[in-house]
Image (cartoon, rainbow, N blue to C red):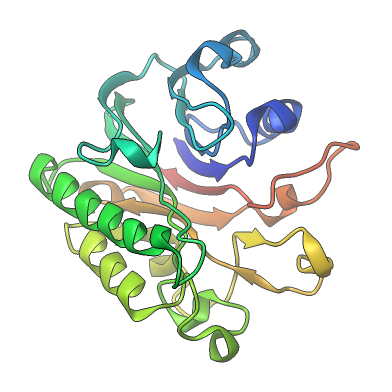
Length: 257
């Protein structure tokens, strides 16, 4: 079974690109982020043609998350309780024997912006929410765009960017709190010394200059971690495909027994 996460940076603009990836990689469950559309605009039929059901928590022009699965996902949580003003950023569902959650963590903009403190509060709420509702021994996955580089290895220039947004001690402290609920960053566990990225700015040739950040993750409980056979950042799908423009994020996926 293959599970994946992907910030698609606007599903309307990326629909055929996402469909091409689904046909090529054939994941069983996918958490999507940054849909930028409302629930009623979600293209269910386009995914049904490929054998996917969808659960959606959308928002006009901003945010929005969804779960695609081969069997209809049963929604267990729509939105992060207490953080509704920050938009449509969390969706949980039971699918294929997993408790599967996709999140789009607030960007934070910069350290002087009020969204930075809101980001930290959102992460605190996420930790409390996940710790309260999730059995660490159950098969669960928390995935998405976290907008955090957990370590210097996850940044193309950690020395220059130290203390900047995505790299602050406060953000990394929240990251440790989230993973401290019984979750493991599976890609990093399998590639402990590898520098690889999941996001590259569209500007300045960042992708080709290897100036990226690893901010997209699949976190898993031990019950899932034991089943993992492989983990990849699908860098090839950050490139144009058949004339279609990619998201600025690459998909990340795990293969399970």
